[in-house]
Length: 204
Image (cartoon, rainbow, N blue to C red; front, side, top):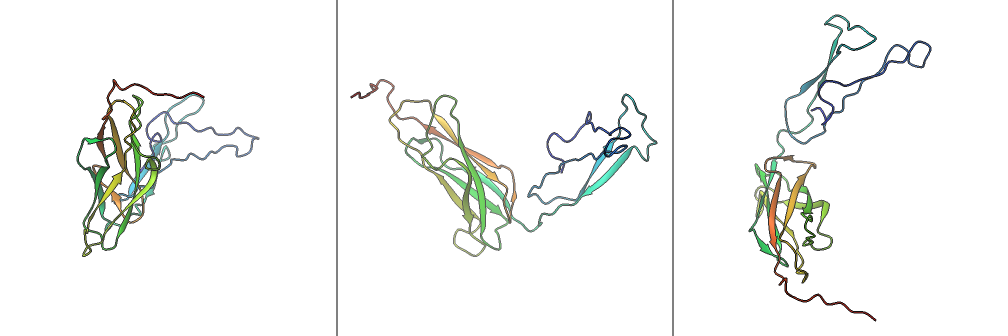
């Protein structure tokens, strides 16, 4: 439950001195993660550590525990993603299969994020296809195609010689489902341009 970076030792809090606002006490906050995974409730424990300028109280007062309750529905389906055929040539669509287990009792809309490797100057994903908040809807049990849906990412045949690249689709948190493993999938896009083709420009 504890958010990344909030766990471990070496955390600090400053208690104001006498005569200052809030003197003698301070609030220490631990952030928790609002994930979509169904899990048992848990506990967050904060323990005083030794330091300079103070003494640690007796064991019963040197540690405090707060219970964190899970708020996810155990009946929500688990969503996973798998790549379609790979590699594809630039200009062809990269496809991904998004699956719900068990098949949902009602259609589930899943949020996804699309990214591509651009370290070598690659730029295959068609305009408007990259970024977060993409969606795909998985049909409910008893419907045609129940339990799975295909998500498509269009690529561009740009005429520019470049390195092959990868298109990655990652599941994002949403309502009515939990994220399983694997939560991301990758399809390779192959460049089909001749590196010996001349580079054409025009000037007025």
